[in-house]
Amino acid sequence: MFSSITSGAVRGIDSYIMKVEVDVSDGLPGFNMVGFMSGDVKEAGARVKVALKNVGYKVPVAKITVNLSPAVIRKEGIVVDLPIAVGILTATGDIKEEAVKDILFLGEIGLDGDIRPIKGTLPIVTKAKSKGYKTIILPKKNAKEGAVVPGMKIVGISSLQEVIAYLSANEKERDELIPPTKVDIKSLFTEKDIYDDKLDFSDINGQAGAKRAAEIAAAGFHHLLLVGPPGTGKSMIAKRIPTILPPLSEDESMEVTTIYSVAGRMPDNKALITKRPFMSTHHMVTESALVGGGGLPRPGLISLAHRGVLFLDEMPEFSRSLIDMLRQPMEDKVVNITRSKGNYAYPADFQLVGAMNPCPCGYYPDRNKCMCLPHEIKRYLSHISGPILDRIDIVVEVPKVDIADLSSKVKRAGESSKQIRERVMRARKIQEERFAGTGISFNSQMTPKEIDKYCKLGTVEQAFMEHTFCTMELSARAYHKILKLARTIADLDGSERIEKIHLMEAFSYRMSDGQYWNSREESE
Image 1 (cartoon, rainbow, N blue to C red):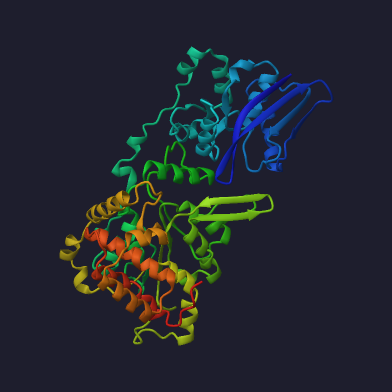
Image 2 (cartoon, rainbow, N blue to C red):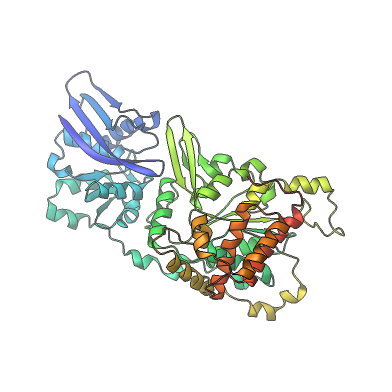
């Protein structure tokens, strides 16, 4: 007696279709699983046998062999309980062979027969659609996630008994027994679902310069570093940047949801991630947790921040080697992890926002308060290397707040996130039209080719650029970043061309780093 059940699994951020072949034959009784798998995958056999017994189906006393195909891919961290259980029941005749035809099965089974959620539902369903499958039976808590893929019939089940009842019914009865899960994707993109109404820029008093820098960073998706003494509002500003970013598009939402699904970070019964991610971490984070990897590779925080914000508070407290690991992802927008078992690539198009004190005590260059020695300040600031600093578009000081800015009158007059977001959205619309069909969404993503095309300068502006470039001894990367930044400032002003005032403001965001990092390393 033989059966073949279709399932799926993830490998890195990608997925593949897997065949679960079950053979029940005479011979020495036993349960054997083959197909190049790790020990944790083999544990599925023990769970399935107990689960079948507890729901009233006795596993036959026979030689049972389960093969997971393709054999060339090592099976690690995948869940094949449900397809194995269905395969055994089909091989023994408890489920008809035609009942499982063209259906893909996903799910982990508890010892009591409950079907538990799995990781990677969205990429597996997407792959199944590309291979021509139309119906997928999966855990009820993953049903909404799978239902966002159009044209797929998603059947969410809670127990092994439900699966058996569903497969035993005829075609007409099935939809009445367990109605397919449907999701209206457009209804998920409401302002309430997209933005956190508990955080707003109107909560921040004063700091007009820092808020302006945050607005520019949001409009062009530029990296931002906030420098200032303790208690000036650096973290408050950083945490509110997602409230002024453009909403995720449906395609971006699918990308982000795929990453969260593979990482096992999708909330139960959640269809899509619709808010731009905001990831923050402590400076004791490990390399694999930040960048990704591990024994069984998983996306790190920088991939979980894809299309959103990665916030590093007290940035110099992170080790220099840890911060330098961001260099390649900041440039390439992807994390490449190489293991003996294969290569893995995770998207990492994030906006880095850092906050830091200018010295260990936090009060440099105010020598009335700062007691740090020069070498202590230099060692502290050296945790942020020249190459990383070169990749940060905006460095802005966040000074001590004046008492006048803390008055209730000023607080009432503060701009809300919605007001700032409207300006950001207008600038974003300009960029959307500019880069239509190019695969680029923001000014920060421009390559030198696009910079030459969209950041042309007049005679006066070119002369100013050349003079300032030589005076400040900037790198070629910094030169291009200033042009991209000036393009964003011009977009916020509604200007078709980059003018001198836009370049001046863009250059001003490179002045603070020179004040603190006097002996900068040569950019790499």
